[in-house]
Length: 340
Image 1 (tube, rainbow, N blue to C red):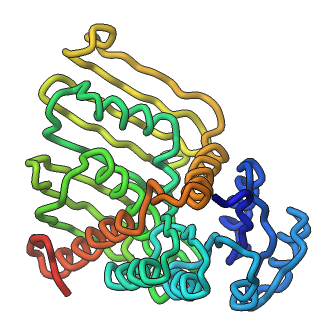
Image 2 (cartoon, rainbow, N blue to C red):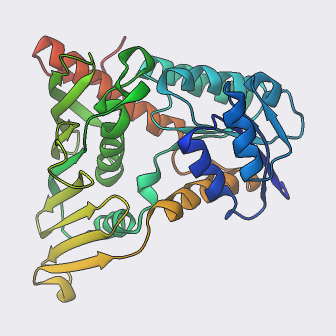
């Protein structure tokens, strides 16, 4: 059993700083090195968190023998390659979502991690916000009976920088939509049978700006999901909701970014919730959710077990993403498994 997990960070931008801050609240860990091609960014983060070593070449970080695991937080198109390099250097991997730009890349990452026998966890942090954990627990207990329908949406304003660059894996579905897909797959806990998607591309950016799609699950559940970057600031902070209807009630969770979580529940099976009930989760959800996922990653290393959000979970999300894009191009539904 590992006594202390020594961690390296690849990517010292905004998300790298967020993860580094969260790691300071995780027991039995130490951030020992950081890497970014921007030397100033690497040195600045190292100074912020009192890290002894910083590099401009992440391979120098990977060559350090005393690093147990890495956190990878870089633009989408770089994630898979750096993850495979990390696995080949025998480092356990915490990789930011979506872990790759398509499901074929994701398969390569998983195969490399399995071959090198390293842990691989994907950073779907919304599984660790209180309002969604409470919703998942209610569904697992059968609070609303048999699930029949899922509605969900996630969106905000116009993307900028590399997130609006198709060559780097930009677009709203790979940035925010993947969170929504992961949440629904986690809630429903069944394999997807069919996907049908409609996609609006930005005429100026060349990336998807609005996506609406349905998923049919093998257990009969139907899901209708949407994501967009075309809110124009009309809705402060965007929208992020998942609503599930079942044979004995319904439950909806709204997460207000940088704010509260709101859970609405009505259940014929739970006496206390026989009438419509609203529960508010107050407090800053940002840092705790990152601490939660990194706690899980570190604990998986220490106890030599699989993490809760595995590479296979990231793969399933990207299979849906690829199906939405393909369906949007062809105008036809996609049956699973897609192949190719």
